[in-house]
Amino acid sequence: MSLILAVYGKGGIGKSTTTANISAALALKGAKVLQIGCDPKHDSTFPLTGTLQQTVIEALEEVDFHHEELTEEDIIQTGFGGVDALEAGGPPAGSGCGGYVVGEAVKLLQELGVYDRYDVILFDVLGDVVCGGFSAPLTYADYAVIIATNDFDSIFAANRLCMAIEQKSTRYKVQLAGIVANRVDYQKGGGTNMLEQFADKVGTKLLAKVPYHELIRKSRFAGKTLFQMDDGPDKDECVKPYNEIADFLMSQEPTASVPKPIGDRDIFEIVGGWQ
Image 1 (tube, rainbow, N blue to C red):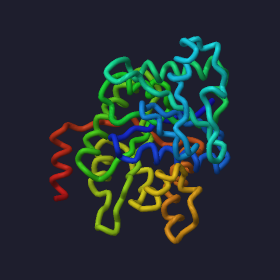
Image 2 (cartoon, rainbow, N blue to C red):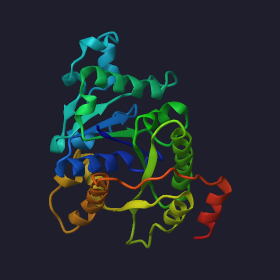
Image 3 (cartoon, one colour):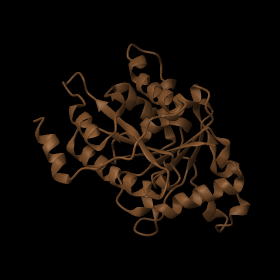
């Protein structure tokens, strides 16, 4: 059985870059990995493949939605470290449902007989949960991971995600594995104080702290994972958190919990207390 992970976070938080590097770290440790991008931009797997690959929806449109006419090679591209990459795509703007698209992608993988081939499957999901459709990966996942930064908007989105995970956990097996603190700027005196307080209040933990570093930005634009970038004085510091997350996920029984979201005014108290 595959370990299935749903990765969420506020839009523009660096979620896809984080997910791709977690996938790479897992693969380099010997796991067979599939990353599924669930965003109409279909750029989740760009750091792994160096290209904007064809989406499942585009492939289905070409064959008039006759699933039986598609092959594995039509929708899956193998990227760095042997990670298999798939982009679900999305409905046209202003129409359709993201959940339907995710469901079609999973259905096609199951029909092709490849869904159970992997040690780890990661869903990289668009933004925070604004509708039931984009919470669809939580119905398949063992664990959710939230990517966040140490600011109000990110924590507000994380709390909304905790609400979705709590709600889904009443009918499905999903639990929250933890929060990844992204873009931690130690040089400018930044930290994770608010995120740590929030994590404690909702009953979870920080899985890792990813530094705010130019090398991470450059790798994204280069269409590479951090592991592919030239060695430099700070590369070890940049890849360390992804290796920590991979080690955690590959442990025999990763610790997780059903989060207990807090009220909106409680978030203001957390933020206000650190000003």
